Image (cartoon, helix red, strand yellow):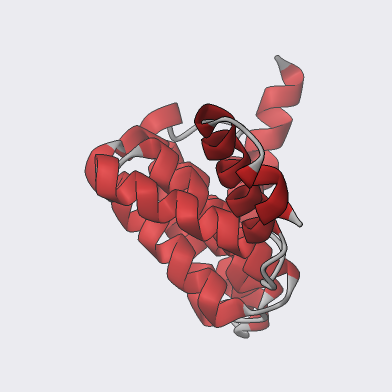
Length: 174
């Protein structure tokens, strides 16, 4: 039916209708929701700007989030590690954003070994950028202490919790 309509139109209209038909056909391709479009965005951005582009990193984080919703931890980890490595090379000041997501992934996946190391790294990065007495360190320390408790390292966890509580109480007195 589309063919009959196209034959009766002028060439300029024919081209526009053809493009519309291709677009409509691509919308009806069976694929997992969100992955095709996001995967295409990552590919285009990587080719155009390289792996270290902040928009590429955002797309990698988005795809990882889609896998996290599905509890596909290994695939989500792959994308988040790529995002962390990319931003580490290009914009170290932005490293905390994908790193925090990676740490959260390890918590949700029930992997305290990787979680503890990740939260420790996040706490160190935050301390370097915000200062060792910043109250914003408290949440990262609390998350690390939770992982330490799951690993049976209760003494280390208690010290970290006390330090986090001290930071929070110092912040509340100001």
